[in-house]
Picture 1 (cartoon, helix red, strand yellow):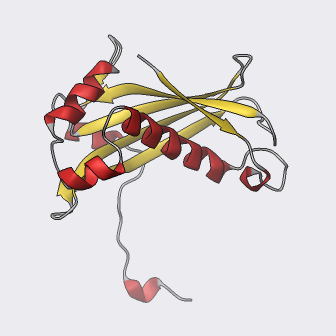
Picture 2 (cartoon, helix red, strand yellow):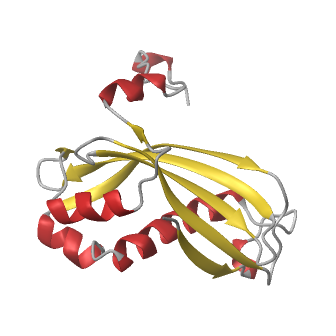
Picture 3 (tube, helix red, strand yellow):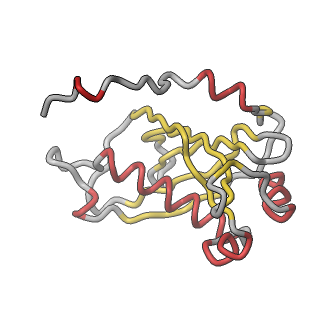
Amino acid sequence: MTFYHKFEVRWSDLDANKHLANSSYVQYCAQARMAFMTKEKMGVTQLSRWGIGPVILHERYSFFKEIYADQIVIVSVEIDGCAEDSSIYRFVHKFYTPDGAHCATSEATGVWIDMMLRKMTTPPDDVVEAMNKYKTEETVVLSREDFKKFPFHPHNIDPTELTI
């Protein structure tokens, strides 16, 4: 299954080139995910009761066609990958105009965290059930090993190198 959320592009969503700003793509994806979660009864209130929260660890984009002010854009929410216990997930978002033109794609990989412990956790059965409804035959099984495939990893430096 695929979930769709509709947006009207506002003036404040644009960049200096008068098309949808990169930061707006990030915000639209986040809002589409929250609309999906609310529809599936795992919105902000329910997440607070469960004491969990979604955290995006890696996000990337490909852009195909510009989106302008006052256009309608429809953003999909698809589950591209998921751990067997749903503790790790990967959403794919596709941006479409109402005529079906595919304008951009985003991939966001994240985990559920225990809000008190601030550590990765397995979500409640209600979340697992909701996530399972949106899996397809193409949904891959994810594990912590997949984090090693991210293109960037932390590399601390000596703070004395930070000359400001």
